[in-house]
Length: 392
Ligand code: NAD
Ligand code: MG
Image (cartoon, rainbow, N blue to C red):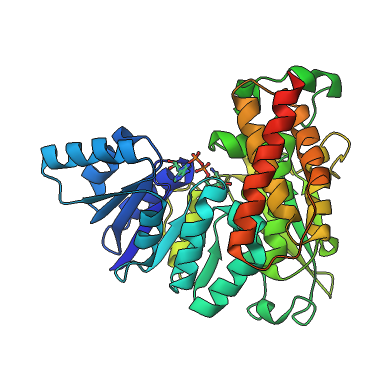
């Protein structure tokens, strides 16, 4: 039996992961489940999957969950706090760690899984954006297997030659074509973007996702974060990655080779495909996703991204080129701005402006330690918050 810890099990990716696991109960055993504050949702999952451990980031929620677990006589140990997230990621009986916490809050536990040499199923792209260099070092030092869950990166991984880690040029790869749906506002008149509501931004045309990544898709910061994620995962730079708008989200990304071949991975837009792929790799298993009906889809469109409409995509490329602490600043400012937009304290179009101002306000330094990145993250959040407060 393969032991799995699902970090962020109550979220969109977490729930899809448990759906895949439930289809293969003969092969996978859930060892730990974790959530932020929704103890009711986690309790339901404990009843179904009976893990040895449950972690709630919030201490009060953990106490409530512990009381409920005892009252029901469930055999799960309830732990609380960020340290406990790292502890369950390192457990001997855990072989695979699904890193599906949203935001920089997922970095510590994903790093712990990498250091402990686990198969890391990485959904939390923010880990690579904030600490790409340190994260890849931890994977190498720990002897971990890093498998991308983000659908585009999983697609790219599937289209890569086996020796890609020796360098893309050496293995005949010339370019990565990173596809993007363009989000709900791809074809809206630009002047209407000023009045966008959180509900409109979260209504993604093709994917059903958590609120933060849904807003990131609407601003296209999601593609910006994914550009940075791809640079670290595949050892390349933004010059070798072309973002391609593809509104149908059927081609999940492509890899171009020196001989002119372009390999693509296609499928229905359902995260259970990359999840099942990464869990079973190098084998294949059923994910519950239906077969692709190309006659219904009928056509696939491709267009160039519009950087004037989507300044976040430009900002992410600039941050990756600047290097050092710049992507960590970008990520922190984005998390604060997106939350302020969701709380209706910041207009949609001011998200990019808040990030740009935060990037200009802080010096970019070479990355030496995790502590330095945490401090950069904290300062960038405080500055972004100041810009948002100063607007009103
Ligand atoms: P979500 O908001 O639906 O779920 C987030 C999970 O993290 C929940 O279980 C929540 O309880 C937990 N969490 C939130 N804050 C926490 C904190 N401070 N400490 C501990 N736990 C915390 O998000 P999601 O859509 O499932 O996305 C999760 C990650 O996967 C993100 O990094 C996202 O970018 C990435 N991702 C998601 C999708 C998708 O289809 N949803 C696709 C690709 C990548
Ligand atoms: Mg993606």
